[in-house]
Image (cartoon, rainbow, N blue to C red):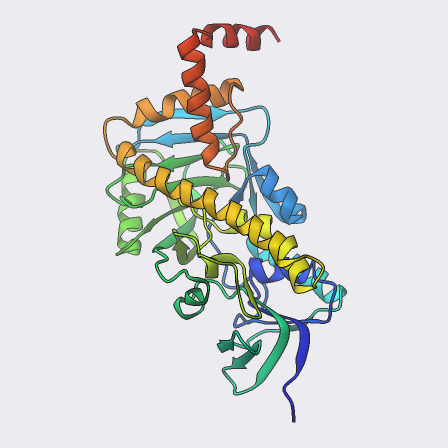
Amino acid sequence: MSDPRHQVLIVGGGAAGLSVAVRVSSDAVLVSASPRPGWPPHCTGLISPETLKLLSAHEAVSDTYRGAVFLDARLREVCRVERRRVLAYRVNRPLMEEVFAEEARARGVRMMFSKPVVHVDWLTGCAMLADGGRICGERVVLAPGYSPRFAMLFGAERCERLYGVEVRVVLARRMLDDVFYTIHGSIYTPEFFAWIVPVNAGREALIGLAARNKPLERLAALLDDLARRGVADYTRVVSRRNGIIVMGPAAKRITRGKLVGLGDVLCASKPFTGGGLYAISRLASLVAGYADNTIAYGELDAAWRLLRRELLLQRKLTKLLRVLLSSSLTKLVLAPICEAGSRGLCSLDYDRHSSAVSCLWKLYRLWGGGRVAEARAAEENS
């Protein structure tokens, strides 16, 4: 008896797999190790307006932020970006994935949860399930999250990872709910940063960090420090979350035989703030079209190469910024960007980190020509 074969087999029921499932038009089946959509939950879920639009995830928006506050290692404010327009949205990841799953089922996609995949043959397109079963696809969208054995298939064997941890706490005092906070250069998270994201009208907050080792111990120490300094004192912990944050470098290729990758399996994440929804939002429609045979390989490959170049550039810039932000140069680096972003002199995109570099270059040109004052005056008179 032959193995079941479908036009599209999607391995993974998280944001990446479900983003394709809602876009494919062919005979498709999705298999996932998770017991249900949206599980396990992920950290925070901050994304830019553009990423939200591309994901079509408006139903899952839970909070809106028009500003960001940068704190140094001593939890002192360095600068802030405050805008009239939205800087970032927070999406409820479990809700988003539940909505995507419902839409995919309505389109005829068959869903099989609690079905871990232990092996995928890139030549035949057949997946071996943990229960001994096999299922095959003419195209296989491999989106199981980060997995060393699957990442190697796309040339992402050098993918670096950090361990992210986050708690949701009830605050002792309400915080402003339209800005979020990031902490840089901290001894608690030297390889990354820590965050405070107010939710529930500022009555609660998501507080987290990422580190290579002892993340739970580091987070506990940070929480004590935040409470002691009066930055974010809390009365109780509501929930805890954790997971792997991939840091690059992005995979060398997006396809392998009958396979096409999406999400953390490609090590495709923003290196400075983490998170894979940015890359997913830009590739999901193309991956679905390729799986459906409505988009040629060349178009998909060109899009991946362009995105990969951007992520690799972000990675190089991130390494430089980590050094600068752990030194006395923190304010020198961030303050001009904050002021320019707040005044509208630069267009800052929360997900596209290279926009900060473009901002610095624009400021340099303005300063070089003595036009900063003119730009400010024009903005104030508009």
